[in-house]
Length: 215
Image 1: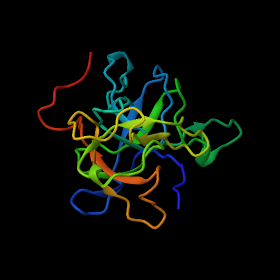
Image 2: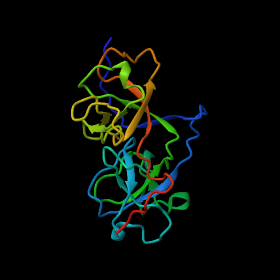
Image 3: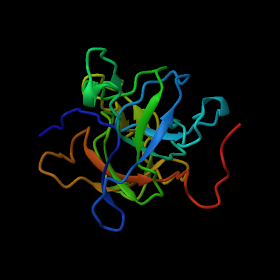
Image 4: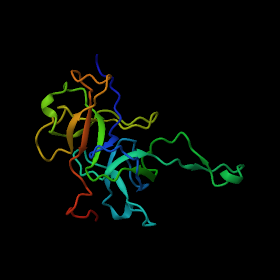
């Protein structure tokens, strides 16, 4: 059985303690000056450009994280924008939810729901199409790889775990994600490429004794 190639970025599935992931997230701001689209499953980091930070000073401002981090957290949802429709009154006088908005287009600005990660969230991620899994990878580190564009249809990220296209999993401590196991599911063929893995953040922006970021 081969694995379907259906990238989705990073999907939180459990806490490292063994507890269920509670879906507790924070709202983060994205500047209209940021010219990169963001999708569910994309890892993000703090936006270091002061001019792009939220004028209201209420939310962390974020951009897409580098493939090796540091990583603040992962996008798990996009708040629905309100579309103004003049003839609507009452409950929808302020606008009608745009139910088609499942990603944040480039240079539009807005908000995203993010897991503020302290290295304690387990994520599922798909391996790319370069190499079949190796048992030796468990306990090693890996980077992410942008093997496809995010989908404007599903709203999901196109990021995969790099299995050697650019950087193979290794003991190297500077790689961004630690592999803690394979997804134990009948549809996950661990002898084939595009296998699904469980990883945790190995370059945590919110770790203690980390310098602040900004300009």
